Length: 291
Image (cartoon, rainbow, N blue to C red; front, side, top):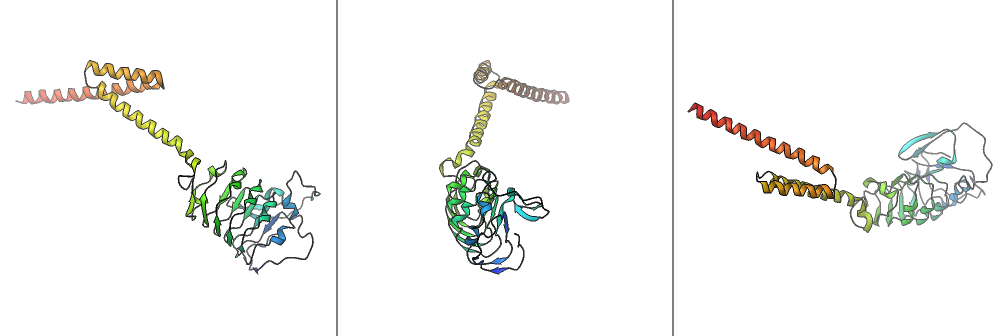
């Protein structure tokens, strides 16, 4: 059922019809001017959205030519034959108010849920964590508050999450998919903290640990090389012995490539000093000959 981009307005009232749209798999009412609360009374009838392929007992529908444009993962896609793979509810760009119904968590076959650009308030219901197949969850540009439910971290199929421009606060949950989302999924929520928005919230700093360790290792390596060249290039036998001793220790304790790096750099340094010395001697001879 696609009624997108019309001039429909007003509230969606409850229907007296029993078993309304039991096989409905796509509901697209986006880009209209619907008001009042989300049509919870309709959601009760969406039986096909409450069953996955494994549990669905409804008879198969024969092939038919039909198409509908579905917005999924930020892109418009034309579905020629409606399959359960694209089970979608898109109510974006309307004027819906009130809370997000807890009942939406029962629609476990959903792949796309888009409620963005409305005036929805209150908390994000934890029941959305039941949508184990959902790939796109778009709630941006509403007036949602409270914390992001930890149950959403269990959504392993979630590829696109957009909670930006709300009034959310607290720690961003940790989960396999949540570590793949960038700042633009949360921007416009000044009360949120944790990876990737900021540091804090315990393990949210873990993704930066390897990078920090690598920087420290690089600084230690640079400091070691500087100290080594100072000792080796003093021109004294004792300095050279000390430098080579340090190189031997680093070679035996860490990566064997150290030796080749050190030898190459040492040869380069010595060659440069010899060239400078020869140029100085030539200049001195020229001056003497001129005198």
